[in-house]
Length: 486
Image (spheres, rainbow, N blue to C red):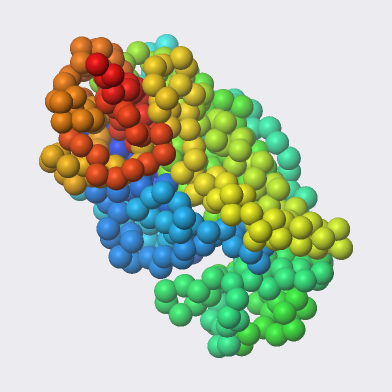
């Protein structure tokens, strides 16, 4: 049997990608080496752009209902928080929701679309030729080979797909480690962080009565990441920094993590693609890893579907690397900067923290810039000479009067392009030939375009005076034109 796509890895990135492909009608097989989902959640946070991604497919409600919204984020564990409440989005907050629950909700969606996860199926080797690729798999009943048109590695930092394909993973190795524990705190602190010259910890309440404590001290940061963390060690480091362990007890997960920072040299190699941690690894500062991975998948999904169905040449997949590789590079840069601020416990680092804290407190524009970067709301892709000042930028959930839905994002739920005809009463009803031609050329076929005539009911930077806007399935602007002056 020949598959359209084999997705290796059933974490949040692989699940979202597989669901996007199934939404478009693409045949996809998902294999996962684990026997079941881990009960331990490495990630806890969904950022505003990830919530927008979910909203574009009508999925945000259960995530928001179960999660805990926090209107701030942190930068390097600084005591002055980033203000997400000022961001131009329906989701001006970070959402605390364990990764386990995120994965369960995404898998439910995948199953509803006719997909499934094949557990205990480990990718051994990937080969490719001009017509497709093969994956050797070790499954419960022995070894077998999957043939596919495309293979996507969503299998983490130690990606077997990336290694087998010979894609370089340059960067820096681990030079410092941190501590992580999910514990009960009988007397939790009122502030979300504690830090001084000895070390620093972030303390995040979880919905089930536990707290996530994560941080490091001068002594702990030199301990190898593969040395098991004991409960007494975690308590001792917390006491050293805070003078108390806050009544810490009942540990259910203890771990270490490192500051290695690496990025795949290319996100596409022929018929092999990478997304999420397989494409970039970094210190978990700012809770960005899962979020950037989801956004990788959202960028890739509609493009890979279009190529699989013959609606676009495979050169479209080169834009995946062109658009997402710079985002990954920026991710590594900001997490490395945050590591210096948050996990370097020297007098010099303390001085740097003080300077940055004053900067964030005294200059709202700087605070807003960092919040926009971490939330991924400020991500924009190169316009490549296309017309329109909005081209490549993120489309907000524009309020609409006269449309089948009250705002833009619900119009994207089926994964098609949306062609918006906006403007004054006399101009809004026009469907200029150049707009339709541009939309058809980009979408690949008319049935992948949903044309809507409406007037905007909300205002957003840069959108005033736009007549026609073509929005991609991933919520970025593909093409736009100004209102007629005649």
